[in-house]
Amino acid sequence: MKKILTTLACGIMFAATASADFARIEMGAGAWMQTPSGEISYTNSGATGKDTSLEKEETQNYAWLLIKHPVPIIPNLRVEYVSLKNSGEATGSFKDFTIPTKASTTLEMTQFDVIPYYNILDNTFWTTLDLGVDLKIMNTSYKADGVTIVGSTDTSYSDTTSIVLPLLYVRSRVEIPATNIGLEADVKYITTGSSTMYDVRAKVDYTLDFIPIVQPALEVGYRVQKIQIDEDGTDAKMDLNFAGLYAGLMLRF
Image (tube, rainbow, N blue to C red; front, side):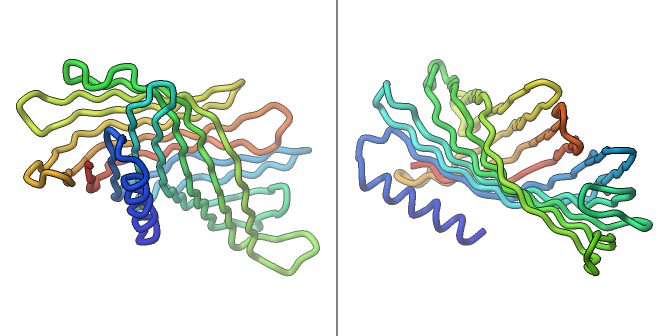
């Protein structure tokens, strides 16, 4: 987490010195108290395996950086990071291993969102509306302990994958007049065939405006992320949900 904050801070300082025309720079970081649920399943030639979430709450880190500039034709930029973790219990047979009784599993995922967006409304009557595209980079690590691997004496299986998904991005924000309170929500969404992914957040934040140049703020919200992968011709399917409260600190420049 320290490295993430350092990288974001360096990015802000570079952006601020490289161009004095930026209208706004914001950053934030905090913790997401997420509770995963759902399952991963595998079916092929009569072999069936199922990995069910234990629905154990995990506290994971998040961070974000927003850069808005006054050039209309060039999109603004938002960059996000979040980590997810799911502990599960698997039974049955999968592609690369079988399970004698039960196996403990761990799914860890890091997500980087690169979001070019345009302001449709920019604090017009205290209302902001952004539209853009989210390029979500997902790096996934899966591990199962207590399994039988064909042709190996190992009892632990691990695998890593990386994919990039394009999602529609919509963000709305309302500043409550005569207060330092803001209400904000954003949605990232894509669906194709029987597969769907969305990432939805709603929050309230309070800006401490006693510092004129760099204004700190507090944010508290609720986040839900769904990852449903069910493609024709594939043996493995995933249907996982991550939901829970999050809280963090912000800086406004």
